[in-house]
Amino acid sequence: GQQLNQSPQSMFIQEGEDVSMNCTSSSIFNTWLWYKQDPGEGPVLLIALYKAGELTSNGRLTAQFGITRKDSFLNISASIPSDVGIYFCAGGTSYGKLTFGQGTILTVHP
Amino acid sequence: DAGVIQSPRHEVTEMGQEVTLRCKPISGHNSLFWYRQTMMRGLELLIYFNNNVPIDDSGMPEDRFSAKMPNASFSTLKIQPSEPRDSAVYFCASSPLQTGQETQYFGPGTRLLVL
Image (cartoon, rainbow over all chains, first blue to last red; front, side, top):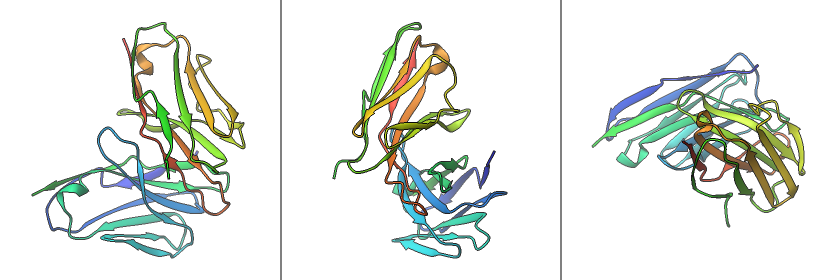
């Protein structure tokens, strides 16, 4: 079946630093999504990408849909303590199903 | 706008008991997904519905698990009998299912502990 490789698994950074994480797959996806999950909550959609090559920003977040449709990255600029959480990438197919990455645990030290 | 609503938020039960988890999707969304999340296995898709019809239940672990969607605004996930290994967080998500824009919105989850 389809699998997503998300890296890194965890990151420990200082407040103010930029963050980059990515997902790769051997399969092609129609949609790439990035979610953030806070402790005790459900994943919250951060950015949705629908076209190969698309670059989208949401505040300090920037994500890109890889031109090959097999990868995506998420950047967070000038991190702040509330960025702490688990970030998931997800690839979508035309059947509506999502395949999730394993998650990146982000810790931000003040 | 109300997001996906799940109940209960927490459930503690004893092995062998029946557990029913409930979900109300976002109004107008015609796809609904049930996931299970554990530390070991991450987010696993259990089953999903399109227009109230189950499309893929290959992720349902055993016959002890069943899911229904009697109408567009309500779904249940039932575990009978429950076992300690069923302890996990169960999420419901809904989607408008627009081809080319497969976006899912998650509920807050039900944290299940089976003793």
